[in-house]
Length: 315
Image (tube, rainbow, N blue to C red; front, side, top):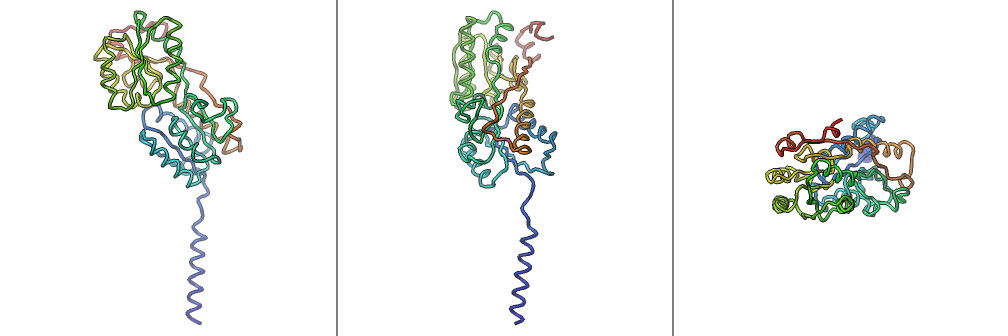
């Protein structure tokens, strides 16, 4: 009888301990980022700050699980599997491969995306107006035509531009097509220079010398990750770089007319809050864009290359 009583007491104790180990009631937010570089990092920080401004603070009423895929598609898939297995309440995916990975793993967990140029061509949305699935968010489509115009304004003597991008990035190809249309429109010749991995960057940029008068680099994750090398080789060969976004300028490009990735992250956070707080359906939430673009330039690079920025751009 005494033995039965001890067993019963042990069972009661075990059950009480299970009862104490309650599931964390805080919302679980997963963030998957393709690779760490200035633009995507700013995008992520804007998202986190945007959530906090709306009352969703990491460590208080939400738990943010940030995972960096280090530029590897296989890592994106592994992280996506983990987030789905963990039953996250919402997933924030930064850059197209990361977004495609998580979208391919779940049709029920709400996903907000950013740093994706064209969600439709990436097969993440049926249309920008009606995404149609569990995915919505913001596009980082930059004013590619205006950036080509900027190149001509700063470098009026330029005749041929080398367009540098990763051949495997759908976002980049989309931007390149827009840039090339504008080149055709204003009578600027262009040559494409593509890379498939970062080891090719130095050699490809070196091969541009003597063939082009300037470089155009759209918002491309591989180029962004290797921008220090791109800028070093380009500057050594007297080639100014007109970039797709501000972080590329800070890392050695000459100038851009582009969006603010931090603000884009905050805008994406507002969409996430609408889902978490109001129960909005991503399928019915249109893809959003930033409406304001900023001019920025690298004074040191301009001085090194002997380029004078038109005064009207500085106002």
